[in-house]
Length: 261
Image 1 (tube, helix red, strand yellow):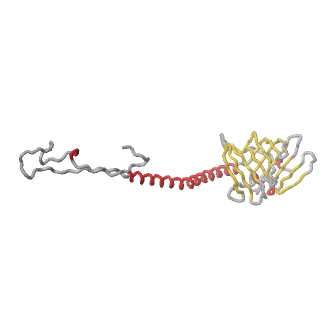
Image 2 (cartoon, helix red, strand yellow; image 1 turned 180 degrees about the vertical axis):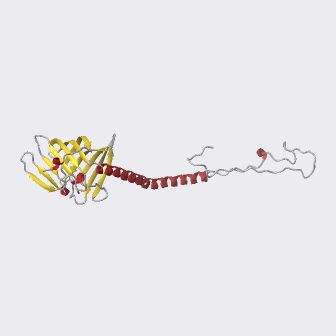
Image 3 (cartoon, one colour; image 1 turned 120 degrees about the vertical axis):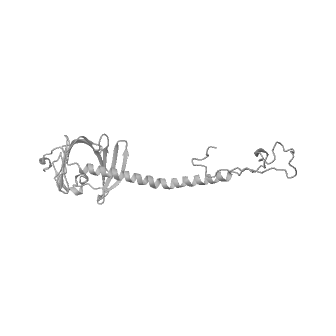
């Protein structure tokens, strides 16, 4: 009989057959024996009928066992799944960290969507070589904006393209410090707030312990290879600036004059 459950029958049903010897204590002469020879075994169909044990209890016990197995599966599945996801997340973070720390120089075109709804574009140059605390950066905006943002490794200068006024800031106090730090380490002062995969893109949101509500979301494409494509800066007032890179070149020689005020 085929098992009712996806595990072997553990409570088999046993039948019982009785055997008896029929003999004649009175006379060796042949007497009517209903077709049974004296001294032979009584055929099963003529022997006493003993009812088979019911299998109802065995089925009940199997139902209980199946329920216990299901409960154990539910209890253990979520912790195991969470552990696997945590392992995968750590592996992805390590891959991204290695990729970012491997960028010595980068040159790209960029498009910037500003909080006021306006869009601007320009050229970006980034250099992260040597042992400086921070690397160097130049964002050169196309006309009519003509704004320049230059970081020389210590100070970031903002030059308004219209008024020509300049303002200087320590790099460490600006969102640029996320990308310009000598060594990017997600286990130190950079805290991963969220990481998710959408199709062929990875969205990684990081904050600094002293960033006062400023978050940076780095967007990477994974096909054909891992590559930084976008970033989104959200300030303490929830103003969002979205930068998209194109024609990205990594490892190209860059003139030091690009990073001079």
